[in-house]
Amino acid sequence: MVQTPLELSVNTSQIRPGIQALQAQLVAWRRQIHQYPELAFREQLTSTFIARKLTEWGIPHQTEVATTGIVAVIQGQSASPVLAIRADMDALPIQEQNQVDYCSQHDGVMHACGHDGHTAIALGTAHYLAKHRQEIPGTVKIIFQPAEEGPGGAKPMIEAGALKNPDVDAIIGLHLWNNLSLGTVGVRSGALMAAVELFDCVIQGRGGHGAMPHQTVDAILVASQVVNALQTIVARNVDPIKAGVVTVGSFHAGHAHNVIANSADISGTIRYFDPVFDGFFSRRVEEVIAGVCQSHGATYSLDYWQLYPATINDPAMAELVRSVAETVVETEAGVVPECQTMGGEDMSFFLQEVPGCYFFLGSANPKKDLAYPHHHPRFDFDETALGMGVEMFVRCVEQYMAQS
Image (cartoon, rainbow, N blue to C red; front, top):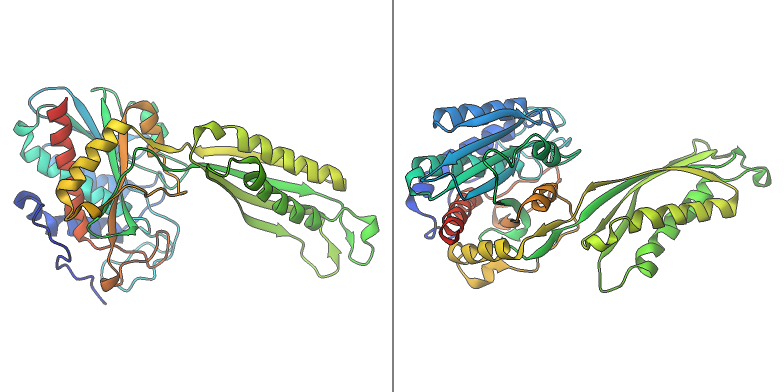
């Protein structure tokens, strides 16, 4: 088995000794979690592991929040202000292909998006802050969230009171990001990640013999035209200065060479940054489908729903994270301001409730073959980023408290 090297590949002089001393533990925690990945709302082993560590360190915490979530509270010199740190902890239904000694032990389930690292970073932050709680002017709440990959654990945690008792004043979170190199931080004000909307549609035609199309309503033909027509929504209805994506990711119809399909199933996703489009795409998608179906004598059924709103950072909190990042990364070029992605995140629900900032922590290292994209069966990241993540969080806590 090939083990990912542990030597540091970037200058870590900006990481304080107390956090550098945690690096080996951060790697061990991350690898422990990586070996036993769990899907949405099933993170029992992970949450048990987290709770055991928090208990060991004397950190008060609540378990079983929104099924498997955990909320820990570290009070310093006073009860306020309260800054929250959020980390997601679920995995994906992917068979891991990495040949490492910490490979997933759960068949068909893998940490292919870095959530194991997010959890380790949050644990390291909790450990450090608990040891230095007398140096914290206020309170830090750490939220370990289930089910980010869907159907979403942030909203249920909010509904269960994760931002209450004590009431959170602001929130931060990070995503290890293999689209950025190790030693960089991506942070921007406003929309960082896109709103995610999904749809399932059944086109109902009238099947028949492939040699007698005049007796049928060809569901494949109708659905194909629907797929093409849906692309005109962004091309002709969206201001070209703004961004939007309509993707049909699934198309299923027919079962024989000489049979005209009776029905066709299509599914897809819509992404956009600007909240002005809330409700727009759902309306236009149905108008397009209805129009195409009517022109061919077909009917349809449509399920359309919003999974997550856009992830929109508060300007003041984004500036705080940016200023902290400039003290952690080696050069000014290491802070990347234009780092938007059409990927979605349910951190967005927390950001709708309180001011906050979600940022990307570069984790790719091609020299170690650690640059596969997120959700790839060989996804992995340079674990040097773990210590950098803890340093970022701790400095954000310190600066936020100093400014409050």
